[in-house]
Image (cartoon, rainbow, N blue to C red; front, side):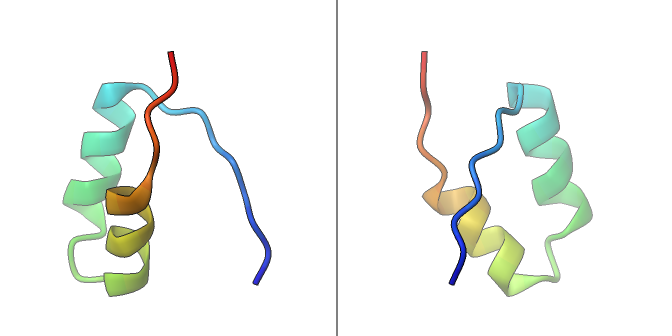
Length: 37
């Protein structure tokens, strides 16, 4: 599987989680996302 790194704001992260709550693979990716400073 390819690996993608995306920089998101907290708002974008929450919006993606809200919009894709029925997509388990996206939710897994979002929940596994690492926070960088």
